[in-house]
Image 1: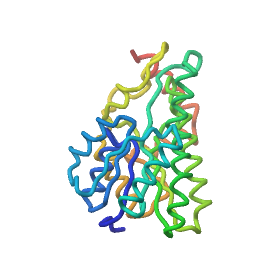
Image 2 (image 1 turned 120 degrees about the vertical axis):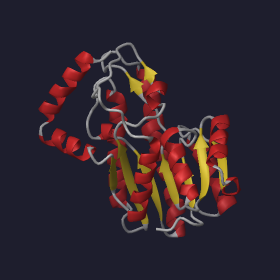
Image 3 (image 1 turned 45 degrees about the vertical axis):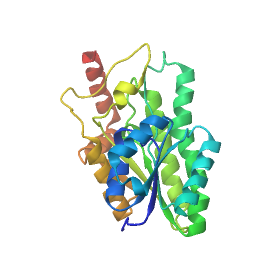
Image 4 (image 1 turned 45 degrees about the horizontal axis):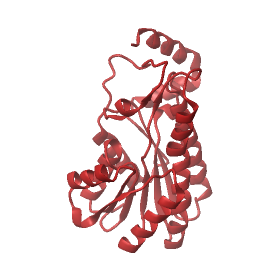
Length: 263
């Protein structure tokens, strides 16, 4: 699918995966709207991405539906349509289920999950009216495999996987395609920016360096071109997900061992 002249909106576009996706899409000819709840940081990202004649940077806190409606109206006023909407905004919480702060947990669900739904509900009528479009939800492998000491974050991603895949079926005959993207470990500031609680452990293989945000962006772009239902990146996460589905006890045993070695 060609991107030249298409209009792409990316939430959480001020850094990391969101910024990388925004840059790749605009480099391929798209008109771009970058959204973030940090106005100065998203404007800085717009400067780094370039092609400023084809881009807008707007403040948007997706926890509030009125903010989503505002940027929808501004986008339509400026570009007349929305062809691709990327839900990339989100943050993490590192803590145990027993100790985590419920206020932070609620806030994370408001951003990661309910904000995604609100954005979908806002853009779906626009895409129906214009005859089609694509919604891309940036989830995580943690939406397939629950991660100890990041369980609430995993829960937001399990929920995102379910809502996106079900919506894809519901919208099958409307011309709107929904794609769910599940990256594994990614080298961004996501972990550094995660809210850290009182019971923090890192459960991941010590040798895992993770992939960079640009690799995720390329996988998203290829998934867009091929109209995929789900993208898992890197491909080595596919057998890990399947292993958990078939032998969850084995994977959980490994997690216990990793947690014992964690800081």
